[in-house]
Image (cartoon, rainbow, N blue to C red; front, side, top):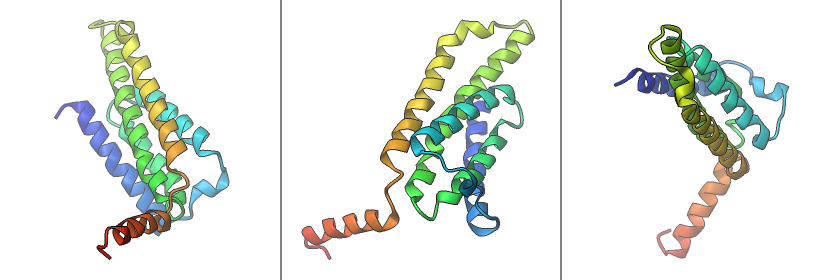
Amino acid sequence: MNERSIMVFLGAMLYAIGIIATNILIEAPHKALLLSPLLELPLLSLGVFFLSAFFWGRFAYVLLLFCGLWMGGIFPGPPFYAVFSAVPLLAALSGGTYMGENALLDIRSRGNLFDNKLNYIESALFALVLALAVGYLTPDITLDAAFGSAENLLKSMGVV
């Protein structure tokens, strides 16, 4: 496994730990500031992208712990939004880590940060588009609605 894959894996683990900790141990910080899902997740994703580029080394994945703590407060309501929010955040972590690696190579005179500027822009836009899609499609889906639709489908097929 390369270093970026390890960062994404550790970030996914810390995101899940943040959601679990918020729902079991601490009061949800998400209630402090309520933003629209169309605005909240893209802002978090871009923040993770740029901060993971800055902290690309050993601690970039820790950002997802704070995102998990933030998003864990909404998990009891629309859980699909909280779970699928991990996808654009992990994409932002991966792209930002790549940008940070190239910045370090530039500092050490082994490469040029701006040679791959289109890759950075693509990574940031990809995370932004994913965040907008998740924010648009999933915030209103609750477990009752999802299981009710599945139950109706099974009833129409004659299974239940």
